[in-house]
Length: 543
Image (cartoon, rainbow, N blue to C red):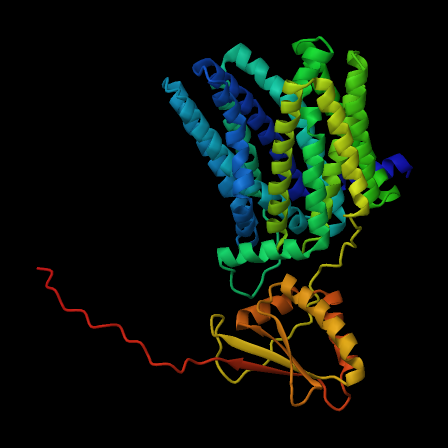
């Protein structure tokens, strides 16, 4: 088999899975319909409202839910059936589009109504998208994640280069109502694929986390994970710096190339070619470069595109430059997305993806506003040049916030935990539970013991331990105790520990006295205060 064939097989490998292939292709149809609908809504708003702000709010109303609801929908995706969450989200999208179409058919067109249904549509996207991306690791083997994430980015960006133009043609030829009707048909495709396909998900014997607890655990895991923090920070800054390529594209076609709709359409064609180019070269780049160097190359490609757009007034050169920039754009987002997936265990991946997405959406929105403001107050060349410098700064941040390569199996649970036998009938909500482990540490091993326990605190806090404390017996200085509360927390954190995490137990065992191995004690607290009784309420006749 030739090298080119191997790369193609690697990129298209996820499509060999029937479930992934069915949902992926259906999602592209849905994305095409959604982009067409966005064009139709913007045009409709422009015809019924004289406010430029209302026109701009059409796009904002559909993207704001992804930013504000990200943490909540991520917790939902991790605590409930991701397939059902996707079905609910897609159903909400179809219902909002159907209601809008029906109202329009009866002649009801109001600007605030359009924004409301656009917002509902965005809520459906915000609900289904994290669940879909989190489900990739459930549907495919972990080694296929890089190719799958690349396919998602290539697919959406390719559709994005076609959808608005197609939507404009349909609106011009048949009107917004026909466009909305076609969008509804597009939303049927992923719902059908989800109903027809089911996939196995690793079940847990533990009770479902409360929503606020799940949100807190997701935020804490993200805050502790250096890989996800670095990826989220770099992704946010990359979106902020490089979004000028997309945000200013209409102005580039009009002001720098002195063109009209045809020039803009040619540039969008270059956009699609760049997305496809990224898909073809991404497998080779991932094998040849580390994750950090992949981001650096992508940033360099985007910065080169921005600089070339400043220097040229030729449509062919601008189109080729845009293809190069979009190839870097897709490569960078694929790399960031893969890193978040590989750095997240299955129990929290929906939350980490949502948090990452919220920050990156915010970065793109802030960048679009900034580069537009610079263009308005200074010039388009200044905006693109400043954007190129900012993009190169994001590449240079690798010295401070490098993105590391993570093995595919590092975060898999070890599966070594055995539930301790207890004499009482403890329920998941029994407690408060006090779980302590005593260590007898020789004085010469104390410093090394403290180092290991600091690492243990980080590891266990990352997977759910709360109120983790380490104490020393003042009468027997060789005795050390650490504790974590609640029976469910104890089970949950030990079920989530990886093989690397459990190796800390062996390190601690080697530091203890041979005659005094570690001893774990499980206690349940009982209230000793007066029992509060509710006051007797008088009986009132209901006759």
